[in-house]
Image (cartoon, rainbow, N blue to C red; front, top):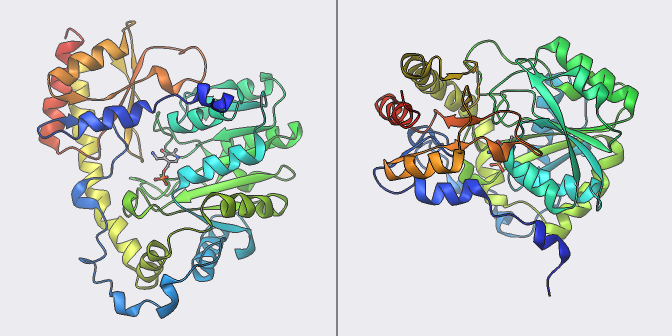
Length: 381
Ligand code: PMP
């Protein structure tokens, strides 16, 4: 016998595809992987193990290292999200934040609102805990206020307004304020997921959506996975004062605390200004890859698909003109040495339209050109 929720535990399509996509010779547009040459490697950055405190190997605090919580609170406050270090919880990757928030807010049949489409692995967690998910349609600026206003009553809304996974879209300040006003009026708790903020190719992105809230409770989270290295498994959340205590208890129940080695590596890197430098040196590489993908998509797939050139993040989201069987297309692509993500699993309910998600950060411009050419051939161009 297993818990009934296990019936809702779908295999992670991303994990399955990634397993195939990492085979030698494969061109992978599938995962949200940072560039290999862009990973933060502490040994290369001159991080000195001897500079770590001697008690590092002992158990630490569930909330996280105080100096790192302080940094997160300062960063959030600097973005217009006034908060204190007591409202910060350090996570084993921001995926853990999704799990903890689901445990905090989702009962069997709890109604929640999610963007359509939304981050696949968040949908899987919400589904596992029994949420009834309702879609909020998006336009080019992200979630549409009219769709939010018309959505059923719900306990919380999950938003990724900054270079969203999968669409790459970024909501304007006006759109954020409008959505926040609606959430306030409807008494909706807001969960904002923000791992891509620092991967911005143009102007810095607008202040978080939750910074516009006047009344509603909120949780805001970020990650070091995309800016430094996902292998660090380091993220953080900041929460409304009513929510932080139960979240810390849930964290304690899950894993006592986040790996202290990762926390100290990042703390030291922050103190030495290495994080900012690392991100700044990666941006030209990502911009070049984004531009390469945009150019070859225009050459090969204009007319077959439409997309918004992302101004940050890691993804192109192709809306296809014709209906396709995404999984069959993927199967054919894998045989030709190309991996990507079919769009359907990013929709909580019925897919609104046929789509594909293409990651541009992990492939060289040459691989990008070859990969898109394969895709265009498979789509009959
Ligand atoms: N949220 C979003 C929107 C993501 O795209 C990802 C990673 N793909 C995560 C959370 C989880 O990231 P991590 O656990 O590595 O911080």
